[in-house]
Amino acid sequence: MGKLTTLNGILKDEASQMKLNVVHLCSSVNAKTIDLALLKATSHTSHNPPSDKYVTFLQSTVDTCYGPETVAAILHRLRLTTDVCVAAKCLILLHKMIKAESGYNGEDSLRDSNSHRTLIYNQGGSNLKLNDLNVNSSRFTRELTPWVQWYKQYLDCYLSISEVLGVTPNIKDKTEDKRLETQRVSSYTTDCIFKQIDFLVDLFEHISDRPKTPTSKLNKIIIEMIELMVQDYFSVIKLIRIRFEELNERVAKPYELVPVLERLSNCKEGLNEFSWRSKYLIEDFWCLVSKLKDM
Image (cartoon, rainbow, N blue to C red; front, side, top):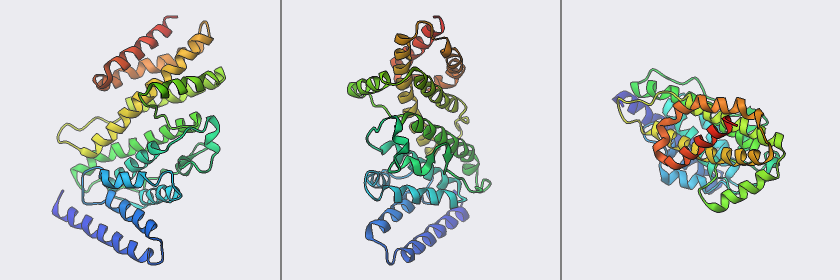
C-alpha cells in the first residue's frame, strides 16, 4: 500500500470516527458500539479481511433486537463507500451475518419480516448496491475489483436460494442436520423440489464463473471470499444430494432432471479446484449425478 493511499485511508477512518462520535451523542451505548465495531471491521487501512474479534461481536447481534440495525448499517456503508477494500469487507461481513442466523422457519419463512435476509434480499429485489468504486488507486484494488463485483452477484444468488428454501443453504456435517433436512424435503411437492434444485444449481454456476485467483501475491481478502464460498459449495452439494435422492425414490425416470444434470456437468471442471477439500463428499456427489444421467 502506497504512503499516500495509506494516509488517505487513515484520514477517512478518523473522519468516520469523528462523525460517529457526533451522530451518537444522544444514542445508546449499544448502537455506538455496533457502529464502532463496523468501522474497525471495514477500515480503509488494512488489506486483511474483517478481524474475527469484530465479526464475532457483530454476529452476536444477529438474534437480538440490534440485528436489523447491524445489517442496515453494513448495507449503508457498502452503498456509500468508493473504496474497493471497504466494499469487499462489507460483503464479507454480510455473508457472515447471514450464515450466523439461527433457526429454520420452513419454506414460507421468507415472509417473516424478522429475518435479516429480507433486509438484504426480498422477493427478488436486492439491496446489495455497489457505489462507483475507485479502481485505479493501486494494483491491489485492480486485482480485487473483479472479485468484489463477482462476490456481490454471488451473494444475490445465495440470498435468492435462501428465499426459495426458506433457510440459508448452510447445512452442517451433523447427522441430525441431514436427518431433519431429509424429513423436510420429503414433505415438499415434487414441483417444489425441482424448483429448489434449479436455484441450487445456479450457485454452482456462479462459483464456476468466478474470476481467476491471483497468483502474484497472497490476497487475504480474496482468500476469505473463497473460503466462505467453498463452505457454501459443500453445503449445497449436501442439499442437492438429499433432493436428488428424494426424487429418485418418487420418479421412475426423472427426465425433467436432464437439463439440470447437464448444467451441473458443465460446472464440474470449474469446481475441481476444491475437490481435495472434501474428496469423498465430492466423489459421491458426482457419481450420483452420473448415475442419474444414465437412467
